[in-house]
Image (cartoon, rainbow, N blue to C red; front, side, top):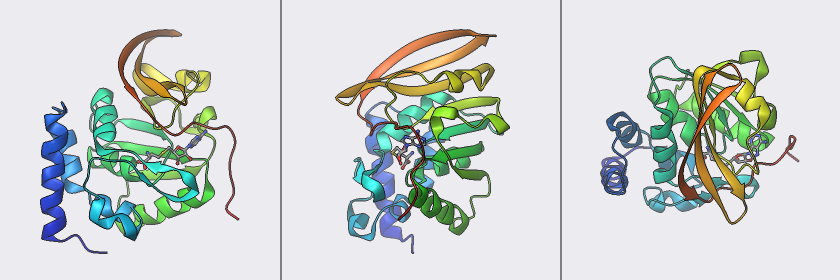
Length: 217
Ligand code: SAH
């Protein structure tokens, strides 16, 4: 795989597009500008990799739209060395953005095939700050809790209790909550033991967060 000047040029325009849509965090825009998104997509979509769109990946899942990735990342306010749990590895693109911001990333995916492909990509790109697991995100990742930040990249019918319990005090959970037709982006801050503050942001549309693990054929 190759990251050419043409890819870099398209990426620069993508960054301009999402900054016009309201993303202001310079570090987030810098990460989008550095990561070769076309590596995370099927070859057939290479030409469109720098459009601000979601695309299909294996197992009928999607790689999120770059604007959505930037939006969620900006809400998290990632600091260097933050311990971050991501639910829904998918292509691995969002994990790469978090890693580039200096986070220590723990990412979980329920589809074994997607987990393995993303893991391979992290090795290929030398993203050593990412640990990937084939696990059910409804349970979080208790053995590594608590986390500074938790990011859910699938539509949750409600906020999973386990995720709230795995936040540090001062920690932040960003999660789209709602049904199949659309979800509200929530930012939940743990302000004390069992004490949470909730803020409501824009509407988005994610693939559903489903229970249990799925094994490759
Ligand atoms: N962050 C991804 C977006 C992938 S779409 C990216 O950048 O490409 C959401 C992903 O969440 C899908 O791959 C889906 O399989 C996964 N998912 C859904 N429910 C899950 C669960 N309970 N645990 C872990 N992953 C889940």
